[in-house]
Length: 166
Image (cartoon, rainbow, N blue to C red; front, side, top):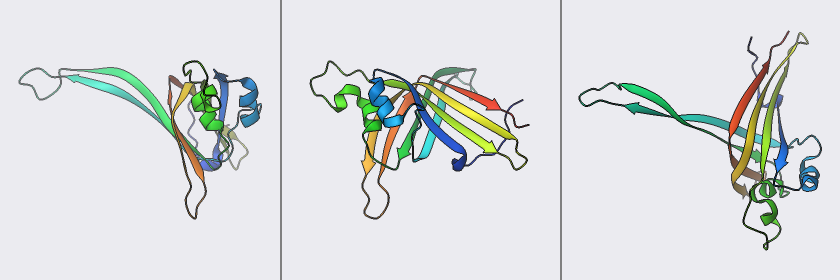
């Protein structure tokens, strides 16, 4: 049976894990042993499949429809700037100009949604994105609002694990 719980942003936790191409000490300094990313907001994940339709001459309806490439992308915003997301994007190039050609770090993202129901039963969904690479980073310094950094990413694969309440 699949999960049928309703979630809000307050139910979510975001964690990074399994970094490749980044020093484990640096990763641990920013995200700790659990890899949890604090104070995130506006997390989005999108999965799209390119669908191609084949039309025969003289026909309005497609004769055949085929699934093409799958693209997984998204973004995350954080309420403080400490260089962690930028380091995840640039690796050693974030601190040292004289490095070999750019090798971007990859990592996994886990988006964990836990919902404690009034009856005490818990259900959750875990969305795991594999081999994530950040492809853009920006930060805004508004006059009278919170400073936020925003990073967009691409992932190689996605998996969902649902746990039913009860």
